[in-house]
Length: 71
Image 1 (cartoon, helix red, strand yellow):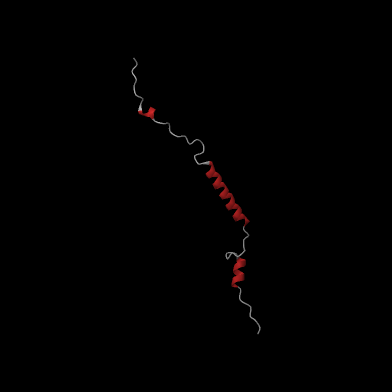
Image 2: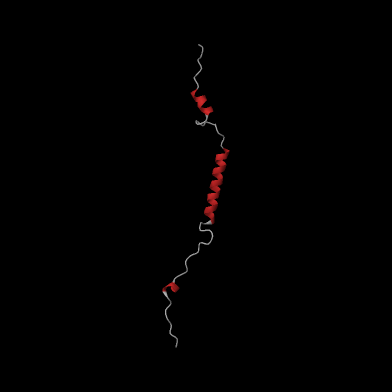
């Protein structure tokens, strides 16, 4: 008869999970890439000076002295 010894504690545990090469889900990476692409496009497509109070043209038109009417 063979003497059966119980396995050691470490042998009974499940193996540790592997994260492989990509620990973040692929769908999350795609979502971040799409939002970043949209943000860059949105900023690049804006035309400066349209109603912006930070441009010199907008400041001059809003602070210009009113013209006097003859009357």
